Image 1 (cartoon, rainbow, N blue to C red):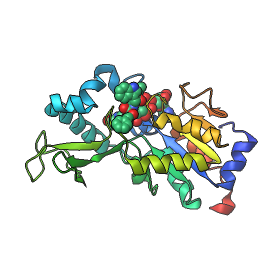
Image 2 (cartoon, helix red, strand yellow):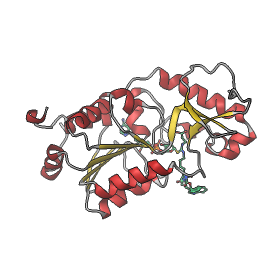
Image 3 (cartoon, protein in one colour):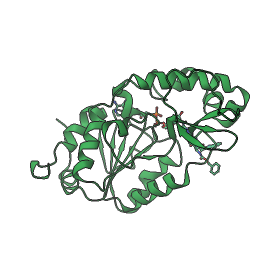
Image 4 (cartoon, rainbow, N blue to C red):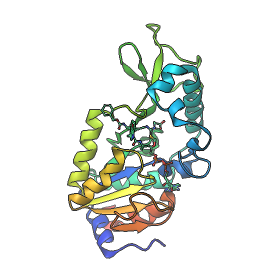
Length: 247
Ligand code: BV8
């Protein structure tokens, strides 16, 4: 059973101004690899080669082979009980905001609405000539690197290191953090900015900040409360605590 403070229980039951920030750990129990830690992507790959515009310019074929493999991997994954708990809670509290660094689309697949994708989407591509983005769920990709009908290279519609985040997503995320009464930080090592700055913004605006993660992270000491456990176990226990009356 997850031990939570009376304050956290009250805030969950009230359901007003709740926002969550999720990272790769949110999808770990769906079988999607994380970036850092045991078996993480950055253990064997260099992010400079694979997740920067320079790496893409140097070798688009190598970058697309990595993303095509991730697309194939994610296409075989399903949302876990943590994704579902967030989606069900949002059904009862429509103002709840889901902000994610993840690009796997599993929050949306679980039914979460208006998800703020800070780092883009794995199944969306963008023409490198005119910047037009479109959904592309082809698994596997027929050609690597894939090209637009205009002949230009397509790139993943994803935010790489050194690239600005989508302005609308940043505004939505920072606005939600400033308004939050309860801010859950789930499954992120909190080392990548500007996303990792959100918990401090929420805390500065008076939110009760709760970390849900089996490990300590860069923001553990900033959190008001830490629930040391996996998202797929902690979230159903925490959010399922919503009194039957609001179901
Ligand atoms: C920007 C691509 C400015 C998408 C990603 C020098 C040069 C350039 C920039 C910088 C620089 N120094 C610093 C920066 C800023 C840089 C940055 O923060 N670097 C860090 C590494 C120091 N940030 C940027 O470059 C950003 N852009 O600043 O632009 C700018 C402004 C205007 C104009 C131009 C430029 C862009 C950041 C986005 C980069 N893209 N990925 C993709 O391929 O996925 S980042 C990558 O890391 C992913 O997006 C991922 O989401 C993100 C964070 O990782 P996490 O999600 O936290 O995952 P991680 O594996 O680290 O941790 C998993 C956690 O889960 C762990 O804590 C684990 O314990 C936990 N866990 C495990 N199992 C479970 C669990 N938790 C719960 N339940 C479980 N079962």
